Amino acid sequence: MSAHAITPHDRFEIRPPFLFRWEDSQQAHVLLYPEGIVKLNETGGDILQLCDGKNTVGQIIKQLSQRYCAADETTISNGVLNFLEVSHGKGWIRTTA
Amino acid sequence: MAKAGSEPRLDGGGNPVWLLLELTYQCPLQCAFCSNPRQFADYRQNELSTAEWIDAMSQARALGAMQIGFSGGEPTLRKDLEILVAEADRLGYYTNLITSGIGLTEARLHALKDAGLRHIQLGFQSTDRDVARQLAGVDCWERKLAIARSIKALDFPMVLNVPITRQNIGQVPDIIDFAAELGVEYLELANVQYYNWALLNRDQLMPTREELERAEAAVREARIRLGDRLTLFFVIPDYHEGRPKACMNGWGAIHLTIAPNGDVLPCSQATNFKHLEFPNLRRQRLEAIWHDSPVFKLYRGDAWMPEPCRSCSEKETDFGGCRCQALLLTGSGHEADPACSKSPHHALVRQAVQQAQRARLVDAPLIPRHASQGIGP
Ligand code: SF4
Ligand code: SF4
Image 1 (cartoon, rainbow over the protein chains, first blue to last red):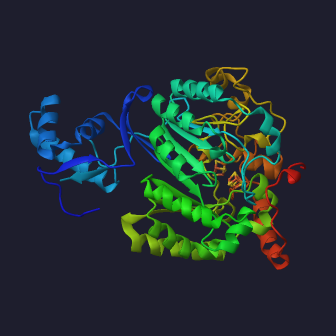
Image 2 (tube, chains in turn cyan, blue; image 1 turned 180 degrees about the vertical axis):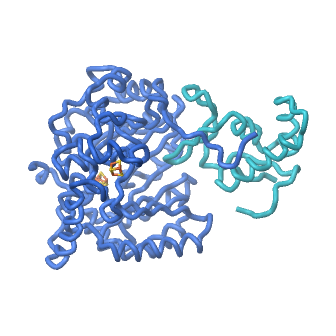
Image 3 (cartoon, each protein chain N blue to C red; image 1 turned 30 degrees about the horizontal axis):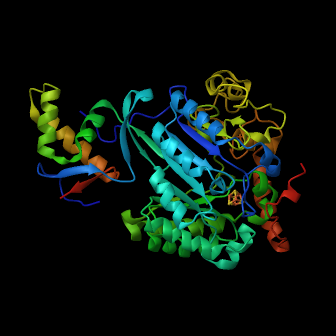
């Protein structure tokens, strides 16, 4: 995966063959892929749900700051960037133009 | 906020997450390492109908299963495969087809794509035509190459699955190059597990430790060279490693297999337990089978474990290894898997490794999977 840092202007989408969806029986978002399943925690699921290829990273941070009523956007921002980096490294998401 | 690598460990919370449908045990190939029952021919008259498979899928989905594998035998021999895939997709499964490729055509691939199939695992024997024929028992090499290309041309995510044996282990570097050139996402160099036909041919199939180490070195080198282009799986097999595999994540934990006749199994090898009477979909609901049948409760959890597993710190990671292997090698499914170096029966595995090395000197022919060989111990 590319090594350069994620910027607020980047846009991400779920990368095939991964399939991202809500799973009722787990009460969680899951990522399904050939012969594997990842169950996401709540915040992970919230972030990936916003990776629709349209939202920029900056917009994702803003939306989640509002949703979590965060007093300090930096914490949210660090968390989002960190999670996106990990997700990108694992090949779950890819950048869109 | 999310921490790096925050992935809550997936378990079914007591429910199945994996459903494997063995649609038929019929197959045009005769692989010497086939893990189908030796009595595969007996299942032919009793295969579940389309409606019965659909009912099974919807019952398992209601229990929480998310991944579905269509397997066999050769699943494409079932004319209703497209219908079943479409129904599985509609129910919300991630659909996987596990096939030899023989029986697939471009038209069927298109139909499967339209039905919602998400991934194809193609079994592949070798880049060397003669070796491929020797292992598969029939000559289908060119058809396989052609179908592999068609699968990629249709942009299916694809796992190339190569059961590794003494015969093809020398071709691992070529196989890696072939997979990279083909553009598959994953190459699984799957060391053969010795059940059924593979167990029958064990002496002739098992590679040596040195061969395994050479193959592993080739894999390491290729991982660096190919980077993200290709994900390579290779694990030194349990016979050589002294470590048991965490089979099925534990018996009756997350996995459910349904045999062609509707028998419901904790694992496709469970039919090796000849004295067990398996629950059947035609007689019982899946929910009752999963939760209450004696077969599923037999090795669920760890209460059944004798020593050395009972007081072992690894029992929560490997669940005492494979129950079927314990049965096949020691005669009792309750024993620690003899692949484990702590097992009192570990000598059996070490002997098997040595015996396979001696057998090389003789070089007896492989016994192909064939109905006439299906009777016996
Ligand atoms: S291992 Fe070979 S013979 Fe057995 S089901 Fe698969 S393709 Fe057919
Ligand atoms: S003794 Fe049993 S639990 Fe411990 S490592 Fe061996 S098989 Fe696993």
